[in-house]
Image 1 (cartoon, rainbow, N blue to C red):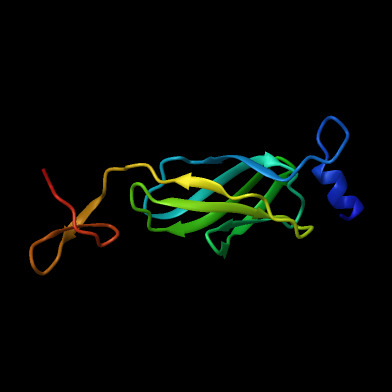
Image 2 (cartoon, one colour):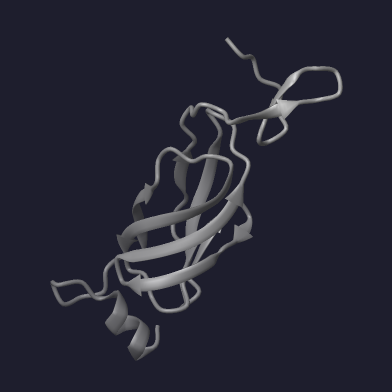
Length: 126
């Protein structure tokens, strides 16, 4: 680890903090673009958030905060694996991002008259 990376990863107790993810928000993710907020320890400049196998455009805030932009088409109950690939080459343990149920946005009907949500999935209208 370079001196700059070591300094960034240090906590208030003086030593380097282990690389880990402790929380991800938001918990209720809808269709389309989402800004993920990653909390944890040991992040260093150049860190990238990895969603599944995709590295996301990531902003380093400090050794405990990252944010990343993603475009996803979640289905309620899906679980995405999220990890951090640090600027020093270390990879965190995966952290689950569980997609909560969210009311679909009904955008219209298809040629067969079936109702579709904004992701193109069939949905029932009560």
